[in-house]
Length: 115
Image (cartoon, rainbow, N blue to C red; front, side, top):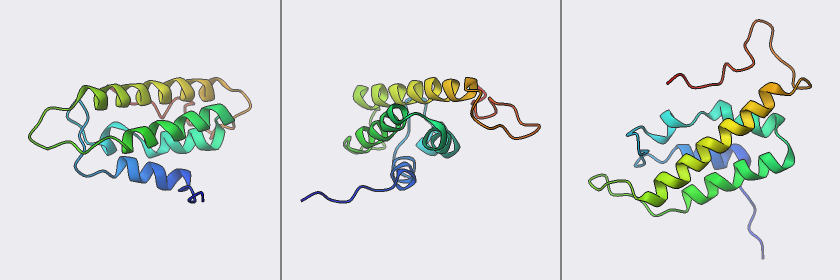
C-alpha cells in the first residue's frame, strides 16, 4: 500500500525546518535555502525540474541526524551542494524563460542570493 506523499511545500518545510541542521558553511538550512526559490521551481519549472527539486530534499531529509558537536559528514555536504546547484540551474532557466510572467519593477533574478 502506498502512503500519501506530502505536498511540495510541506516537504520543503520539513527539509528547511530541521532545527538541528547546519550546512557546511555553518548556516542553518533555512538561511542557506530559500522557500521562495522552491516555490518558483514548483510554479514555473518543467515536470523534470519539479521532480528533481522534489527528490533532492527527500534525499537530504533521509540522511541521519548530525550531532551538534561533530563535523558535518561529507555525504551531507555533497547532497546540500548538489541541491544548491540544482536550484540555481533551474532558477536560471526560469529567469530566462520569456513565457514566465514578471512583476512590474522586479528583476527576473531577484531570487539570487547575495554572497
